[in-house]
Image 1: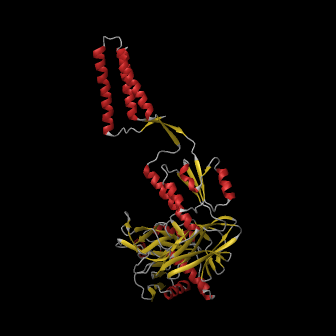
Image 2: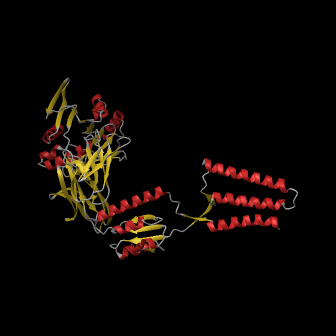
Image 3: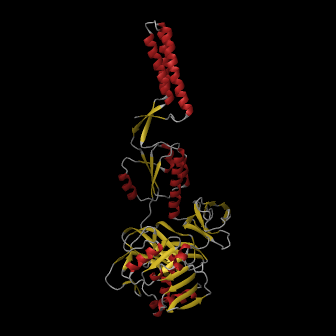
Length: 544
């Protein structure tokens, strides 16, 4: 099929084409008027039309597209084992292996990059190519080496720290995240590739160092900075007092939170207990019977949180909560027993929440949250106070710390940054709930401008390049710090990922053609030869 780069919507181009058409009409009219009695007028008209058509086609500059087979180059890191290289070469039959020092000597349409541990000269060589090929990256990680690892580099005390990643296990093993020898969370791994997720509430303040242990052997270190926690004001709104909620209110008070405990003793008589001078609540803890209460709806509309406890008939009570607050909680029965075990000393209702993409489930307990104007949380747990009565106050605190981490409303201004952060690899931090947004942020020795979000004037981003490793101060009022790692296989992977993304953006901005087709044009010398032949024919014809 014939294609052209001629712009049919550009007024100047259209004017040029119309002028050429008018020129043909004038030229043919003059020829016919002057030579109509000559027996060679037909030949002269044909030669002039051919010349005119040739000039117009030259202006349109047509080309042909034909399907072409992509030429694939294979660039392999030196640490990739030969058996892995062999498997990839079998999959990419016909691919040309390119040495790291000879990237610019061969022309390829697609460059398949295997592994990530390359010197900086390789990246420079690829970007200096006249026509940068499509880049496809296949990372390589050894067995039982962590990959695609992420966690929160900065968070507030009481928030949930989540560590996600992937690892190829050689057998059934257990991955633990530990702090000072204590296990914070663990996950069982099967043979082969495992995507894992570990979670725990941030419990300390300042610099925090945890380790990832595989069957007792430390394989990586997770460092993050914990800002001081926001103390909550919790209001208990209950129809009758009970030992479960009274025990919870006491525990919250010991944690430094303020609690207002309200319960009905009898008709027109209510009991109130104020712990730590509770005022306007951030979180209301109640039962499903109060879902339609005006106090609950007002709190949700104001962006506060509500936690529903002690469900007796989850199916019916979830429907009542949904009708009153516009949520979409769903639960399915999983057992005919009165309760199901969650741990050795904890049970729950025999139901499980149906996952919804707009809801978040607690990592270890049957607690589901949904964000509307505020946060609505529902717990299927039965009584938890027996854990304290049996002397296991640590487990009791772990349960409620995680539930509060999910149920707490949006916290005050906070800086968020995905970790790990690597030296000489660009990183972006997010500022949320700031008012006003600071125009600059100081990171180590650098002063970096903030970019305010176009849709939320209380959020902004900060992009910078860490040039030093270790703990780097942000020089704010909370003495926030960010940990920057130096050498790591994950650093090479992060650098490669950034290189692929940035190179692709530059290629798109350059506006290259579709590489799945080859374009063919008539070369310039051919056009010159043809036009000269046409002019020569017009010059010779009168002399014959």
